[in-house]
Length: 562
Image (tube, rainbow, N blue to C red; front, side):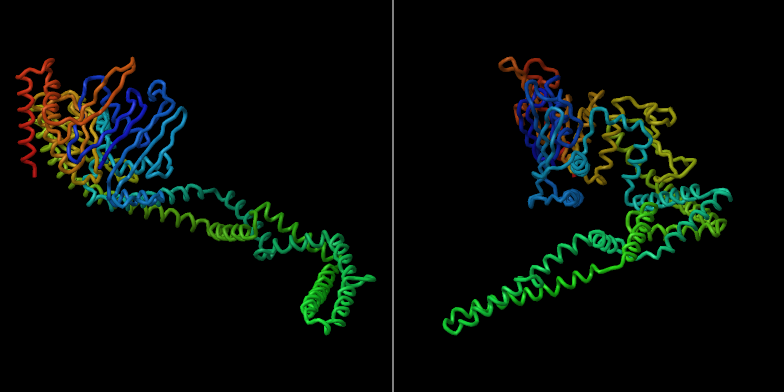
């Protein structure tokens, strides 16, 4: 759940920190006090789009911190994918620093990208903004809701359908790419035969080019190398007074007097080692000189071989392994073209087979969706009746598409009638904004059991409703708060009365600067806020009594929840 939010230097907020609870958290305040600003700050912390105009006037940077507590497996797996180790108590701290032209995000102190934050946010929180209910106008949203509700029956089928569709599209693409006339096939065969023959006739060996390049380097610089090695050999073993002679003379001189002082034995050992090392060095040096004794024809042979390999690299790949891979692919392709008719026939048969499998899976998916649609339609109707749609009829229409897709071959659409005697019509053509908002709440309530997201936020879900309908919405939110943490911004006293925790957003002016703050209110202060929402300019006894009655009525409703 969302434990706390800390906001600094955003719009009217200089700095504020709020701690939320389980259940239904209600947020109220005067119009223009900045209620939606709080939700906007949450959106920013979760990777929402930032503009410098959002910063508080005179501030160079802003800051938002959200603290969640979650031990949900999906959340923990997401963190580990990002190589972030979860805290033992399940605490997850999301921070975002906002500056002119840039921003930085952190999760538990580790720097992350905005996309990573957005990915994690999908598992932590579901924000229903003021206009999100408009998404119900899209048929794709209806399909998404149906599949989420029937996840147990639909998920595996949907995954199989998606994989099959992907394989089918690849098979079609391969068929389209390879369908050619006979002259094209012959030209490609001739080219492939030439390429395969050119590579095979070269008899290439792995790493041959590396060894040849080393040999070429030695041979091409042989004169310089031989001169340097020859002078070194002369200095150590051939010239008058060479190093070997001098070391041997030094050894004999020390040995001749070593019997007179035992300490000289150590010197004898050292000079003996030097003589031995120098002899080894001279033998190795002589061997190196012998290596550079080669015929001019051998150098030409190495050069020609390297030129051949480099020419093949230029054509077929920058290493011998890539050249050989190319030859293997070309040989395989040549084999297919040698029996072109059979090859094309096999591609057609594969695409036809996959299409048959795909249509079969789509049929199973349609059957499963229709069963799920019956249950969902019934539950949604009951939920809408509970939201004061007293004469509502609701049905989920499933029609076949002309062609299958990764999501099956169904067009799903919610159909509704809210007036007696009227036939069912598409949801988008009959529902008003306020009705769409209530329908979305009804859906959220029905989906509560399937929805693993801990925290739900509703920004003015009560648009366009009042009276008895407001009470019904209040009851639904209270019920939703039994299964999830709910944060709800509202201007209706009926909804505010249902709060498990009540927060008020206030705007004040100090030193010609406007400030917005958030604080939790309880008991009589909450009653006075309800009285204000009831439209009372003054704290009259009647308004306060009405507010108390509302809180008691809400408490009775909550006591009835299981």
